[in-house]
Length: 118
Image (cartoon, rainbow, N blue to C red; front, side, top):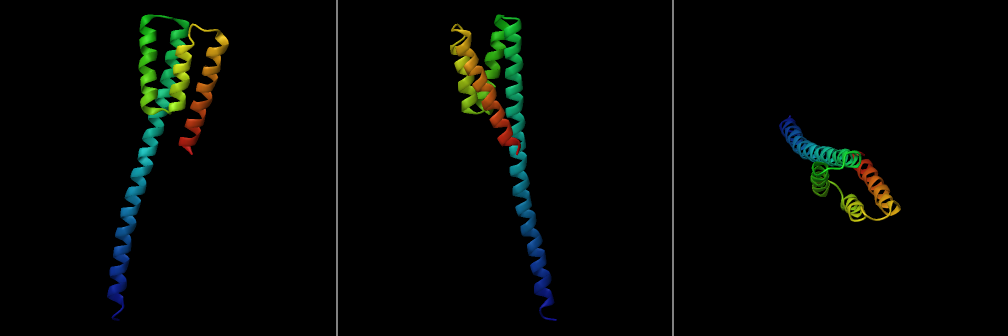
């Protein structure tokens, strides 16, 4: 009978430790989910702004694209941001050069989103 009280106390301590571990694991998972959502939203917003700038070139469309590029710099990967910058830098270059950066941007976005969703 002397062993019952320590056993009950040990079970209570185990439950507390498990709760603490679960709390930190859930907190980390929530951060990863938020990070993924921000990244996805930045990439989709950038693609939408790029589309609008291509079909209706204007000062407003350029500023909108620049804003989304900044969001990509904040929430996306450096590889995607560099590819976007390459597209900007080759805007007056031959279409083939710009297309290379566009393809790299899409490839890097796909890699980022796949790696963060798993």
